[in-house]
Image 1 (cartoon, protein in one colour):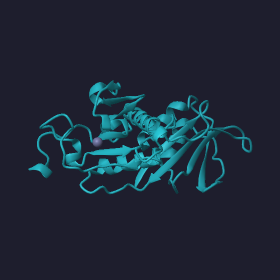
Image 2 (cartoon, rainbow, N blue to C red):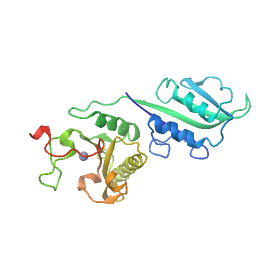
Image 3 (cartoon, helix red, strand yellow):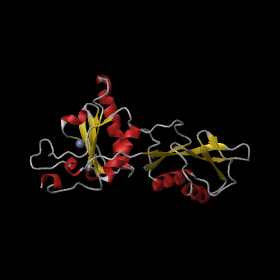
Image 4 (cartoon, helix red, strand yellow):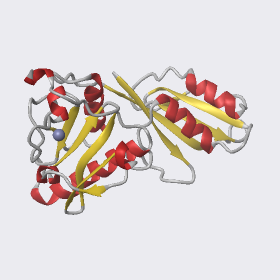
Length: 242
Ligand SMILES: [Zn+2]
């Protein structure tokens, strides 16, 4: 299972969007993001969703640290369960922050790494209309003779929009690429390089470019977004070619 979190903070968008600013956060990132939005030291209350659509009572007033301690011990009872933070007198509490948990079943890609499996779960949750298009493949990089693809180590995942109606392919893949790059910038991507689409161009961004988006890459990335998983490229000859 893969567990991530999303945050809605007021002022801001009030609807959930996996591809939007309420991006998926790791536990530590979610706690830091929530804490950063709680400007006041005290006077907060929390309320936990105990069954889908059913919330428990609001807590007594808590400090910021108290809210974060409650968040840390939150039992995360089910997928999309919500953790509310508010202010106000008992009976008149205003909801000001909501954190939602995302509990995802990770795929098990043959020949893939754990990070690739997690990447697949995040792709599936964030861009469910697109489809898996490859993890482990014993191949080289197109156009670079002698250079092995990260796919040859099972350390890359491709997520494709080629299944969608023609007019939707470009925009869908561009949105997926943009999401992955923003996850990278936030330190929330289980990978270090994204290759995909922006507008009508193939682009890439990585830890090497400090996640700045640059033009370049094979034209197949007009139709799919590639993420190289792990902290850095594997180098040399992969076991599949030895
Ligand atoms: Zn790829």
